[in-house]
Amino acid sequence: MLLNKLDIYSWIIIVLAIFSAAGAYTFGWQQTLPQVLIAVLAANAFDILARYAKTRQFKLTKSATVTGLFIGQLLPLSAELYLPILAAAIAIASKHMINWKGRHIFNPTLFSMLILFFIFSKSSAWWGSFAFPTQQFAALNLIVVILLGLLITLRQKRHDLVWPFIGALVLFNFVGNIFISGGVQTNLGSLGLESTTLYAAFFMLVEPKTSPLFRKARIVYGILAAAIFAAFNLLAISNFPVFAMLLGNLFVLPLDKYFR
Amino acid sequence: MYMVAGVVAIVVIAGILLAYSGNIFGYGTQKQTSTESQQTIPTVREPSLSVNSQVLSGSDVVVDGLYLDEPGFVVIHKDANGAPGAVIGHSDLISGEKTNLKVAIDSSQAGSKVFAMLHYDDNSNGVYEFPQEDKPVKLADNVVVKPIVINQQTTGATEVTAVVTSEPKTVEITSTGFSPSSLTIKAGDTVTFANKDSSLHWPASAVHPTHSVYSESGGCIGSKFDACKGLAQGESWSFAFNQKGTWGYHDHLNPGLTGTIIVQ
Image (cartoon, helix red, strand yellow):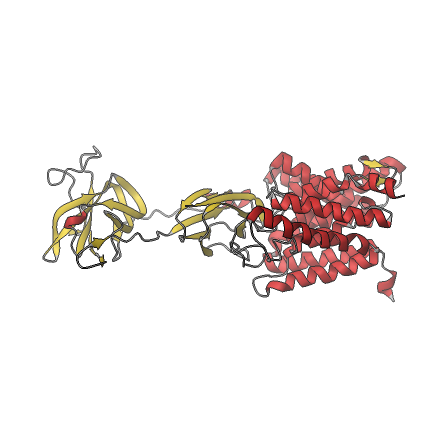
């Protein structure tokens, strides 16, 4: 089977391409596809240059395409088109320069979003995570994100990271809502079970180079990341998924070292 | 090797295009330029008034809309057998287009009908001085005047009370954000979010992306304060705020655009 021969990067590219296509349908191609295409081209170009500078060899990698697709989908709709180029440059620089023994410290896409936030006050939209039209069938988008997310998670064998994350997130949000709003909130969004958080969990949290190598470390990491997510959400911190994920990234190497 | 060179060339060309044009693909700054470059056709707009029957809100009459081509006043006359009678109130000096203009009147003389009339500030001193100055606005020798039916609601046998009505509140969305960015309303008031931009905008409660700050459950993600879709240009979405508090909101498709609704 051809599908069984596909590596994880190919699967993620396929899934992100589906979200891009859905976004083009829902929000209009002019507002979505240009920034995605430019981000993909720019990420590949910068990655090729960076690898050439290191190895004197030209090499095209799928991970650069993944980074470009993520950048295109995290940027606000109709972003000025220098933003995907700049974000791609920052992400690829982060990938090649901010690492420890061959592993990225920060998710490159999220690191680029952090820099854009501080320079241009551009909060990440994550439109790829709600690209399927919610007004026509509210649960459709959530179902698609979960199904495609499960596909990626299982192929990456990172379910021992995602499920502790989701379980802990619901628990922390449930308890936190009682303390903050004084009542029980049952909206899925209030519990953290909305499509952007799940997109972040299924497609970014599990990224092999920025998630723990060891099973116990992954379980603890999932719970820790959920605590940060829930706290930032309850405190209504602007752009919180980016901050929460990057803060979580800092614990990956120490957890691996501890649970080795 | 050729493919790599091609990719690099495309990125470089895209960068150069952006540097010189500011934007491409038909939005952003290019949109403004094309709008500015359109030839404008001069039009002469006549003064106009639009009113509706209403319940007095305190001692104010509300004029729904008007246009004055020169500075002037809206003057409220009492009813004298179906024609404008004595003046019982007038607006401050105004010009151009106004909507939902409140004009303070002597409500004890309002009766069941009043007349709204446009006057020019003839001597440009900003003071309403009719009949010495400040004649009524006329179109083809006809005074611009509209009758307003006043509905009064009674409680008890004789007491007449004014009913406070919810005024329409509108937040316009443009490429630069929400205007006004902060709006104070009463609990139960409805706010209409109107998209004036060519890009889609999706107003929703803070915080992005969970929308869970507004404390009324419902909606499609985390609270009832959520348009649940991108509004196209010219499209609007209205929401009644029943919960008191200060509610931050944002554009779900461009979360850097934010605003606040203060519900008292």
